[in-house]
View 1 (tube, rainbow, N blue to C red):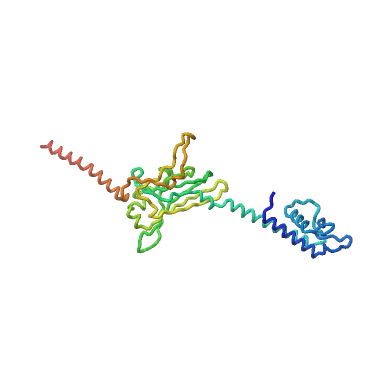
View 2 (cartoon, rainbow, N blue to C red):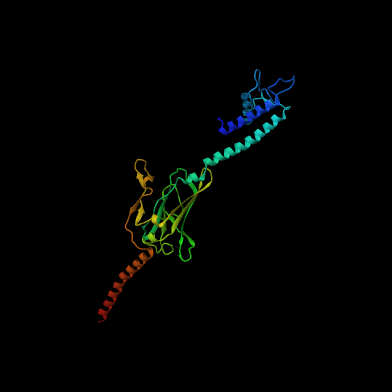
Length: 309
């Protein structure tokens, strides 16, 4: 197993300490019969203790190989102290090294780089109602679990009292789904009805208002169980009135399945859309319904008069 640079540096430092310890202990000098060096069986016959022998012993101690030929002498307490110090420091450094490497490999913010939001939000008529739409996608094969998405509009409602108001918008996914599935590009939709804070917004307001739409996407990474969160926002200048998102899904006859073309993820298409707010659009529709019913009632009154005459 290859040694890491931290382990090699630590072993070299320990070997240097043992070499200096042997030098201070007098292992390089002539010894009396029965007198043992600090580290037994690391002495060369001709040159005495070498740095190579000290390095090998330090590596054996740190990796717990234990060949059984070299060991510290009980008559040299300095060697025992250095061995204990090396073992404790080695365990601490190994623990920190493993933790740092694991944290680098599983950082949640790296996962957010694979989550995409469309650069623009669009407003168009869908199912007879003005709808605010944007797109969310995940280009990674491993899906997020327990995914949640919520949208908040933030802005100042009263210029005289500049306090930031935040209101959560009711959204659906791909039409009517209430659960977000990131396996396919998903269109997030907010129906601009009478309960929406955008009910009286028209294209002119996109040039004058200063609100901001905040989007939060949160999910759990399958491989690590960590929670990650991606965020984006849309200002009025990033909302395109009278556009819809370009369809991304296409059917492959060769593979016999649908495929998502992420090259068109941010593209939009211009469509016919009323240049008025949803509030005014509903008023016009009610007036048109009344205008259709009114001539019918008049014709009935004229018919009744003719019958009486």
